[in-house]
Image 1: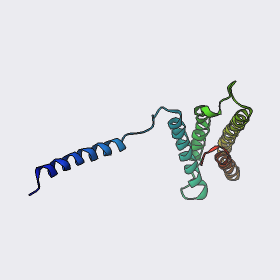
Image 2: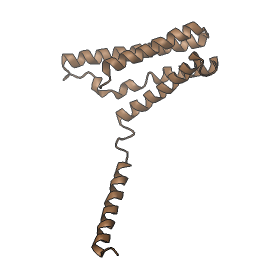
Image 3: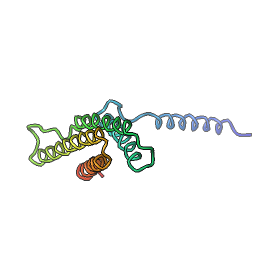
Length: 152
């Protein structure tokens, strides 16, 4: 038979453990924060890119109307995440390095938007080689931006 104080300690331990588990289940970021909003937009862009990649590589059957639909989604989403990068806004207090970084960032964002628009145009034409080349240009725009601006 266990002593009463041991049973009471186990009850406290269980209560503390349950509280800690409940706290770990809490969401730590605000879903309306700029970071959460841009992550959600980038995830949607990635889904469209992956769907097109699967069709262009033969992993999924090629359907021009589906590819066009994904290209349109990608183009629309490529215009959205940039406003959520406050760290690349130019203010009067910005140093010349910050201004240069912001200009580079906005140029990269503009490039992504242009490449996405070119991919949509290629998808509308239905020319497989043009679609592949435009898709590769979008991929390269993503890679260059990540290499230059993504931390870590």
